[in-house]
Amino acid sequence: MESETRTEIIEATNRALCEHGYAGLTMQRIATESSMTTAAIHYHYDTKEELLNAFLDDLIERFERKLSCEAGDPRKQLNAFLDAVFIPSDPADDGFPVAIMELKAQAPYHDLFRERFLDLDEVMREVVAEIVEEGIDVGYFEETDPAEVARLVTTILNGAHARTVALGEQSDETRQVLEHTLELHLGWTPGSEVVA
Image (cartoon, rainbow, N blue to C red; front, side):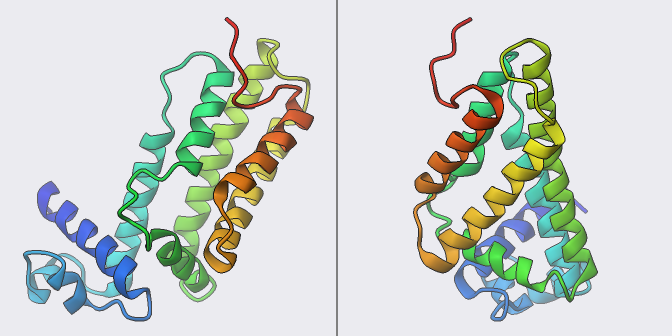
């Protein structure tokens, strides 16, 4: 499939999902958000679930790119990670957190969705664990279990997502709690001035 066609379908899926939610998502609504017909979309994706699986794959790829940080300093990498997860990349996607929550709610019933969310969780845990391990190795962070810290961070982030969507809680409150928790585990305050 051509890259431009795939991108158009995925972006249209994102817009339709944000506007109508999982329950209201149809191929027709996706087509309405694009320049394509439903037949053209069905040519590339047989079912809505197949298309949503591709959408989640794309989400993971974009998130991995967002998390990539050129900084060599693990403290800067950790700050960049927190910025990536707490600062939305496109404020126009107001419905995106709700749409993702709806897809997460479908994961117990759709193995492909569950696998994609497990992949996303694994990406986040690996990134955090690598940053923490490197920070320990160079003496910036206190000795701790990087895998345990990574699991804690992803658990807090998943909880933050649920609290933001379901309770309307501002994510900056959760970021403060997470930063305090990291300070307790690492002996370093995220966001503090990094001294070379």
